[in-house]
Image (tube, rainbow, N blue to C red; front, top):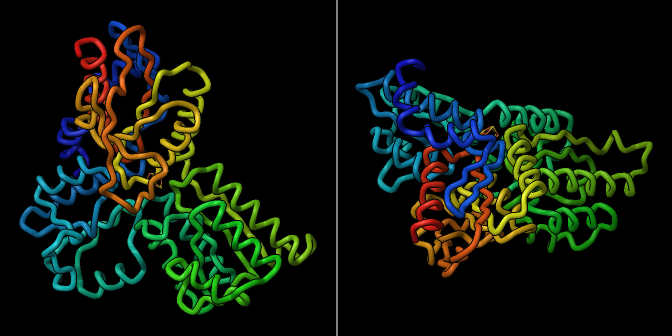
Length: 387
Ligand code: SF4
């Protein structure tokens, strides 16, 4: 069905303006405004494929109910369009996943579902359209190997994120499988401290109560560790956490025993890495007045792009073009706010300088389609040149 939906997808998500900006070496100039667009931004290969499969599924099974387990990707615009296509979301109130049966079609999102949810849907006989990204499957492969070999998976990720929950569940495929999710350097450092020095077991368990596998025992389960990560985390932070844990294991067990106690694989996906590298290059190359990062507020990779930018220049993370309300008002998500808090948005006044040349950097997360980025450029142009 790929060709059958290609036109529909292009109409829904492509942008001629973005094609023109790309052709103009990622620059857009109008009046006093110059926009520099990151050379890698927006839809990644996994998201592209997942959205494509969702549209194909709708066409392929015209007389049947088609469901998504939850958001297919973290972009409100794309999810709303799929709802308009008649695809129902099991995460919406009133939907009862346990009542689905062989007549129902269920699309699994790009970040995958837990082993338990997959088994349940299979038992119910649903037709499954699995869009789990190959890069996520690669993480799972490593985590399953860790579990098989008796290593605890220490996963750098967000414990409530669908991908991390799915990845953690893979660690439980073997009876001796364990996992521990760490959000950031601070949490990794506390794990490292326990590895080196031991400590208050109850306090450790309390701190990681919702982030560890059932029955987790830090005295037993931190002796052999394999590092993994949610594919969309900040790459530099993931690498640093791997090094921190590796150093702690070396201190605890000695360099000659390290291989027996520690493993690590870089499981940041290439699309995430390319987007982070591209925005870093953009920040290095241009003197910017401000940076706009476009993407869902619960999109991990978008939040991390915004963090990179905010370290260098004033940055606004916006979810959609309408967040640019006027030349004097912008709605945005505060950088660094937990991505689990989905409703958080703030309003800023006088965000755009009113005279003189204006240079804006622009990028978008892996779940943001080009038409949204194009509309952001149009609004920036209007508010800069015709406020
Ligand atoms: S961000 Fe990476 S892992 Fe996630 S869907 Fe895109 S390519 Fe796949």
